[in-house]
Length: 568
Image 1 (tube, helix red, strand yellow):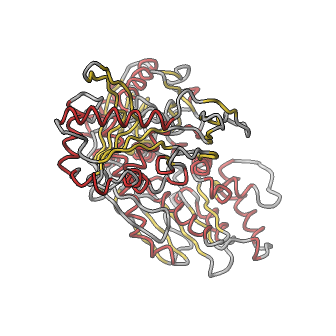
Image 2 (image 1 turned 90 degrees about the vertical axis):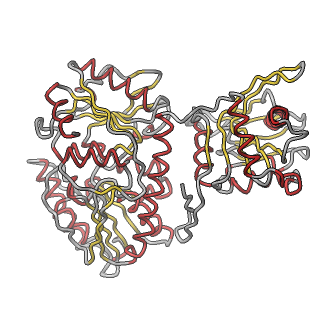
Image 3 (image 1 turned 45 degrees about the vertical axis):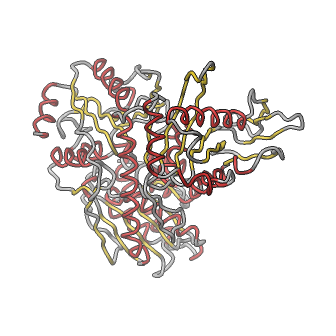
């Protein structure tokens, strides 16, 4: 997949390397694998979790390496990944890691049983020896080296015996290709690596596979992750296409679910904040407003849900009467009155509205009054198909120019096609979208059986966790109540654990609007509008939350029949 630089003004691309082997279970190894996929050139080969136990003469060579990277024109790099934040080498020559317990500002220093460079160099020499013999070469057909990667750490004290080329720390994580190549260059790979062309690279990879070094064929889980990577690429293409639109003072961007609206909104917010402008991102969904700051801490202070934001302005009116009328009319009027008395400096140079279809006219008009004059920017994102609260306010107020996104770049083609059939829509998948697998459709007659099947699907599609289970009811009223563990995973409602290995996130469909997961399982599904908590708009939201894999476990035989008939 192309790798896009973090700089808003520089867009550079490389092609994805060939990645073999299972997805690591360790979170830092997963992060390194993700960065390898994003940064390394197309002709490089990355092999994950290489383990061996091979007889070589009268010896048995055994070991394990987190990654083996094969670089045409240079050679082979063994990469070991360590999750420590701070590492030092003591005067006694021993290695120490400073580990931090969750929530504590101070760490505890522990002595490492084996220096990481020692482990890595032993693995590099063993693996080179094994491959050389298997290939029938007089010597390894290139250079070989090792690196120790600390993706979240830094080396606070090193040793003159340790060359800097062997260490990769947090500050190097955006230049992994350069660090890996540099480790080989430091060992004169420019001379010895000439023979290590693409053919030799492929031969070494084939030897590793032939020797059974835990190189597995791509399974369903792996395919889902690769689909995720392709989808990320397509979303970033939307960035480039709309870059010019964000220079306009009053603009609305309308598009279906999965067209990248929230990602685009955050991209615009970060650009404004980098320019030093007083900017605000406002959405409707409380869960989305809570989740985005977790993943984007650099702009957390500028992200808020609209009702929470309005509550913080002046002396809010007392809650009385119908809550819908209070939040939809009385509170916005209070904000509108307060805005008329504000100084210009209290107002905003830019306001970005996400989920605009849920705001209604009164909230939108109140926000417009909080802009700092006609030069201030107004960026309004909406999808009228997600109007789950049925405001029916389908006019992008405040916009002078309207742009439309027509393509879904978040979901696989299979998910988009199924959603179109369920919801009678005609959303087009982004050209180049991965095909993916058709939705998995099943039903169970009892809530307990539905929950058991949901856990089974999670185990099949996301055995390490990170999936989301969505239902029409709150957890305490759902089939998942009391069934919060399965296959070593824990069900959670903690948004900080959404997408995190070891956890499966549960939410109502409506509360999950604006969020997403690689694998989504919809439980106790019924035909749309047959129950109050699952309208056609809700079903549209539920299906489009799944980036790569969607599963639906119906709560009745009739509901299963409805979903099955719409897939034909």
